[in-house]
Length: 355
Image 1 (tube, one colour):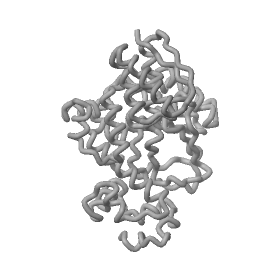
Image 2 (cartoon, one colour):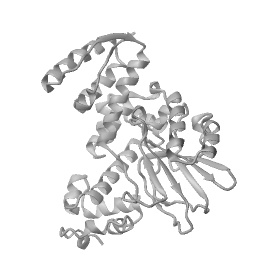
Image 3 (spheres, helix red, strand yellow):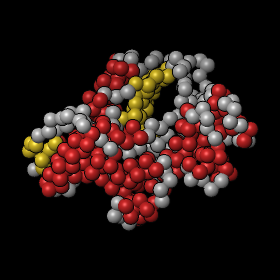
Image 4 (tube, one colour):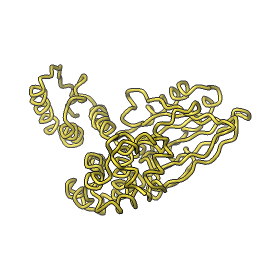
């Protein structure tokens, strides 16, 4: 039995390195947990935060769930992947956030309603995995697909008029919490949801047919997701490495990441393959690309020369080559596709630099 720390509204104000230690402590020993309590009190005193702490004996899984959730919630605050059309406000597309309990694990629920003038959309690597259901509103048939992490771009397939989509978007590092299967060799893949998530489709299909709103469908999906989530499946080494990759923007070398987590490079690659279906090097590269794309979209004073240094590229040519690899077009074309011409007319000379 492990001592458990009851925290009310505290983890949101604690530094990331403390969250990391707290999460690891649940997997070490009661001694480490006691050390956690002492560190927590010192940290709270330094932050002038008042809180009620008490120690109870609870099952290890309960303590692990609470601390793992806090740690993983900190990752979502560090990194929010976006699509090729991050400013899409079309009537047919909607996103809603999951319930509080699932926010550390689920990026969002999203829906799309087809229309006669609907065009294929550019899909870029967003370091997420999706369970996507297409509902034929006329026939009542439902088609499901689990899309694993991508490392290349493609165009979405068209949809017949009268078709709607309901989807669940996982962070790449959380999908394994809901599945007992290995993700090795699944990059850029599409699978039947039940291959990885048991009877998920069987439980969800009747609800998808009988309901019409994303709120109703998300509610049913969340109820089942809460039943099958298992934090014991998460490897501490994986989570620590993901934390380091996100905090460095994908710039840290894999050998350094392996050394920091006291594992061999080969073992680290095996862990990433089993839990995410991708190598740590590829994941780091995708995170760097996503960070760069977010900077281009949301920074009005974006400067490509500063970005070369900030994201660890050797030169401007290296940055452009890497961006095209994942976006299939130049940054200027990407911003035009995202209907963001506002951002490359800021006076920084950005649109003159990028060809």
